[in-house]
Amino acid sequence: MGQTILEQEIREQPSVIQRLLDHERASVSRLAEDLRGKIDYVLIAGRGTSDNAARYAQYLLGAHNHLQVALATPSLYTTYSAPPSLKGALVVGISQSGRSPDIVAVVEEGQRQGRPTLVITNDPESPLAKAADHVVYLQAGPERAVAATKTYTASLATLMLISSYLAKDEAMLAQVSRLPALLQQTLDDIWERLPRVERYRYMSHCAVLGRGFNYATAFEIALKVKELTRTSAEPYSSADFLHGPVAMVREGFPVMVVAPSGPMLEDLCTLSQRLVESGAERIFISDHTELLSQAHLALPLPSGMPEWLSPAVAVVPGQLFGLALAQARGLSPDKPEGITKVTETW
Image 1: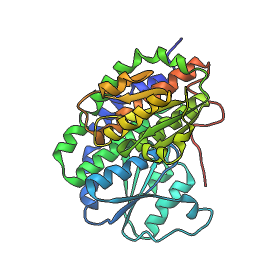
Image 2: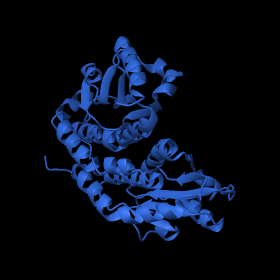
Image 3: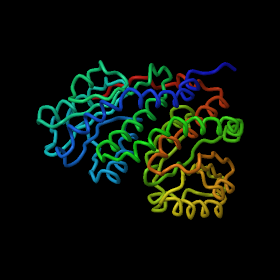
């Protein structure tokens, strides 16, 4: 079978992130200088994959920059014509295409209220980019597969740069520079394991769990599995999962757990032990050897990676899982039925 477009784009991610770091550092440094001391919180508008990048920003900018991050409700700006006060906000739009009218409306309202605006997009000539004070170009090149992969990891890397420059933290910047190599190592390690995904050919539903920085990763992996394989994949914080949804777990129930090293690992290991005891079908994404040994499908991550950096890497096994499962089911990974590359909502 020939290489699909989606596979090509997943494989491109190390070079995309390197190109982003090479070309956008200077502009991100300048925008950080311009924004420092002028904002009290951050409001982010995005849909789908971009909304998951915003979930990551909630943890990243909160932990490293002490900034509260809120997710916008675009319908208030369009359908209801009732935008809230944006006093003190940095208004951010994240969109691979920059063409969704509701996201544009949020950024335009930020401009109307005199607030600084920032757009992260793969199209610097898009309507969204033209509405903003600052634009960071994802440098991802054309993304032809319907399911977004390289624009997601590039969005996370952009947020990492913004956080690092706002914090004036050279150690963080040095860690971000490791991303291309970490991505390449993950791709190399996971690829040989993909034939084992055939085990899940008849899976109709699953839960995807993460916590902390990787709460967003659970959402993004679940989205990829839904888009590519028509599987009902439900994302949860591992903490929220224990507040009711854990009742779904029974013998053979598939659960994917994203658990890189960091402060959340102990909590996730405790939950994973409960999954073992209940006989759940376990798919673990981790660098923790003991945890991986308990998995039916172990998808390893590079060791020695700081947790805050891990979401851009931990999502890759999920992307590859979705690709392999789609192929096992005879589905097109490049053009899943029922969805289009650019979705315009109001």
